[in-house]
Length: 142
Image (cartoon, rainbow, N blue to C red; front, side, top):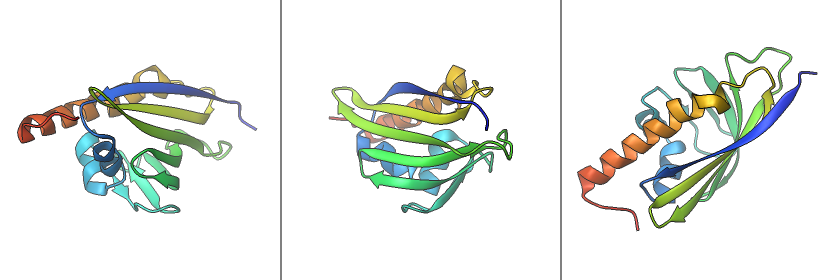
């Protein structure tokens, strides 16, 4: 059995929890917030893929707008690797939403996700997207 590890990351987004939850669970929204093609079946048990099929998984739990749990694997996983799991929570703050990502059962040799992958490919792009949406609407999260 392959060795695994887990980690937790956070980011602040300038939007309401429901905005980021809904975008994460929508093909169109996920694609827009990451600037990479995603297909999401937005129900428990539904499959998804993101980043042009690089990431695949299934949705395990949904508690809108607070929590998403998904199985998660990338094309770097081998047959000996079980799926990893992400738990994404959304907490409303004065400045918008604090997103907390807990990624578990990650293959031990795959540290790029924790060391900038999530930041570069998700958090930075999400922040830009939600800042742009707030500017376009003239609204700030409350």
